[in-house]
Image 1 (spheres, rainbow, N blue to C red):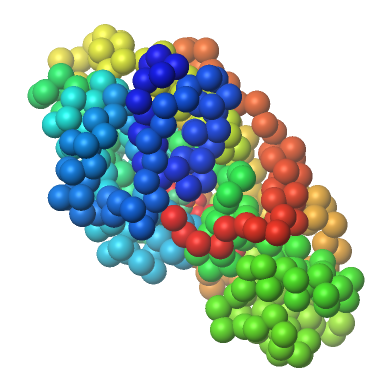
Image 2: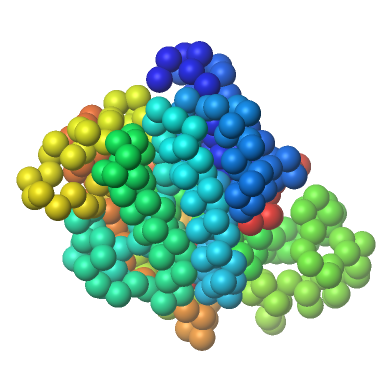
Length: 369
Ligand code: GFB
């Protein structure tokens, strides 16, 4: 990639897309193409075709996707499958037709079997059945990765796939139902602390900036508290309690989104599909994707306590085992990436501290991308 290469970042307003643009700018790249959802619906083949024919990007980061946490994945199964298949199929196919020099497709470590050996190596893909809660999303992401691989093998394109672990960072989604665990727990405990401190103005401001469905920030304290119970934030015998879904036992690995973006740009600059293939001994070329992770693995219980401490929430945490745990463990083996010379830099504690500043900001995101 040259500093003035024409680079299209699909999904530039999302957690990863915005971090990729930031990283590219920091490295001196300056020729970007972006479109928001109102300007270009990536699910519509014709519009995507016209866009690629007009703009002819040279490089593409495919970070546009329908994403969400365990509940969103499980509840909107059809949307997660349909929207992701459409978006990625349109972008990958048009990238091929319009002669894109290199594309990076972003997946997720949920593509791996539910019970595969840990840490997870790239070659474990398609060796077992998937975790039920995110099966549709995982199937879409597997299809995207396979599409890149197949186009490379049949048409000689240069499309790379990366599989990041659980991400968090600036511009994260703080929706209390649909988001991932880290921003969700952070927001719940942030609200819990405001209640603990009887900081009603602070709470009303927070809810005015980013409302919860069917709740006016001007409602009475009693009505606000009643409403917050639905999200697992409650006051019981004068003590504020925050609900943690599931048993707290699942282990998750977390990576700061800007570290992830750094890895994406690093791979885009450094790696071609031919390099990946040359390291494969077998005649059957598969598993050509690359894991991106940190190895920073904690249990949900440990994560909750860490957030509690950093936020300064002094109330109680309780585990609701009626809610799903999902995969019990998914930690990536990042040897492939490390061998190329990349490692993460932001530790979990530091990242959570930065997220507290994020939630204190006036504007933060509660929309799924
Ligand atoms: O982050 P999360 O929603 O997604 O949940 P996954 C991780 C774990 O945290 C699960 C627990 O065991 C949840 O039950 N958890 C506890 C909570 N409290 C909460 C809470 O308040 N909110 C949320 N969201 N979780 C997703 C996949 O899996 O991760 C996607 O569904 C994708 O496909 C993504 O791969 C990275 O890690 O379980």
